[in-house]
Amino acid sequence: MLASAGFDGTLWAMSEGHTVKESGGLLSFLFAQWPEQKRTRLKQCLKYGSVRVNGVAATRHDHPLQPGDVVSIRVEGDARKAAPPLPVGIRLLHEDAAVIVIVKGPGWLSVARNSGKGKTVYEELTRHVRHQDARNRVWIVHRLDRETSGLMVFAKTEEAKRTLQSGWHNFVKTYQAVVEGTVAPEEGTLRGFLDESNPLRVRLVPDGGNGREAITRFRVVRRGMGRTWLEVGLETGRRHQIRVQLAGLGHPVVGDARYGAATDPARRLGLHASGLGFVHPGSGEAMNFSLPMPPELAKLAG
Image 1 (tube, one colour):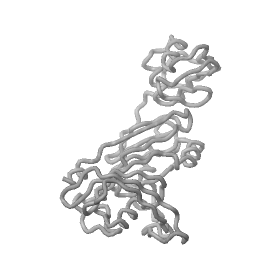
Image 2 (tube, rainbow, N blue to C red):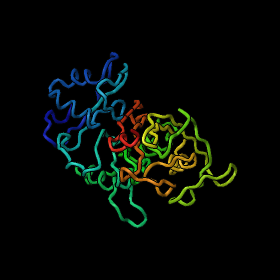
Image 3 (tube, helix red, strand yellow):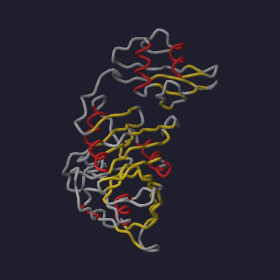
Image 4 (cartoon, rainbow, N blue to C red):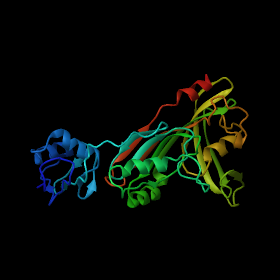
């Protein structure tokens, strides 16, 4: 039973969990086993990753329970206490005990460069998680280029970071890109090798050199105004992979002067991370997030 039946923002601790006797959904089990608690409070515990199934955080109300599972609740601090809003250019989509998923706007660095200059998502999310507990922190799982917008996932524990990074090749990663020129085939796959020794300018190199294999799939969404809107999927995750391979195709991303673009009609890089799918490092549940193409980019292709 709970050490304290109240939900007053102090410690809500479990001396032991409740064992599941029949299959069913997690939320209904919480309601049945903790009837003294308000349902809204139990939902908050679920949302903020304070509910554990067999010791692992679960956040979905329909998480399937099997006989023998042990469900417990552990809340430190007040789960209702709202953190200060994140700055313009960072939007929170999902947060639980293991991961944070956000939308990054163009102009934000994922993490600080060697110079230490520039506003970073990492720094803002660190402030966000430390609002609840000064010991909290976040871990980088992957990066987006400064002028690329879209979905990012950060880990809230080192174990979650290791699990996510070791499974990075299994992530589903989808991008929307507007490129210069008219891409002729309706779809295709780009295969090549990238030399990443200069992080500021990645190069396509012949097979057998210092390059790492890069595989990019694309399909045409729309053509117009001398440009093409592509949906792009990554089978590998190399630095600047999309930008370099599309430039090698003869169709650099608009606004990407580094890789040969001659135009910058949106005053930003025409690349957007629109889809991200992965397995939750704690619960094992499938997590899928998607975003529409930003209007300022969609209009570039008619």
